[in-house]
Length: 70
Image (cartoon, rainbow, N blue to C red; front, side, top):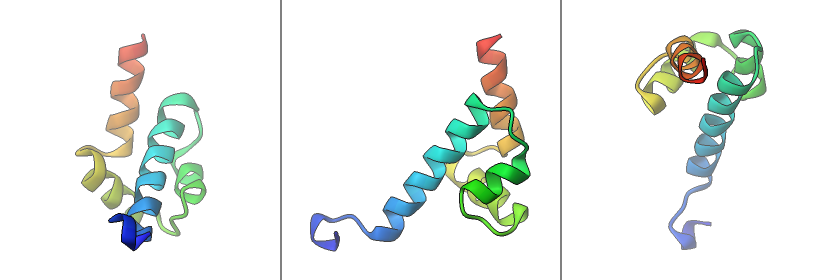
């Protein structure tokens, strides 16, 4: 994979981010469940990573997504 210019860790991070966003927008699962489903062991770590990826917290992201559908 490194030969293609993409590191494995970057692929995993991208997958986790896309999965988290999908679960937040398309399900009503609690954040704690999404934390586990995306491979994080601690909610605080998930919150920090999500904010770094998206620029807002998971709660803010979900709320904004729900407003767009309503």
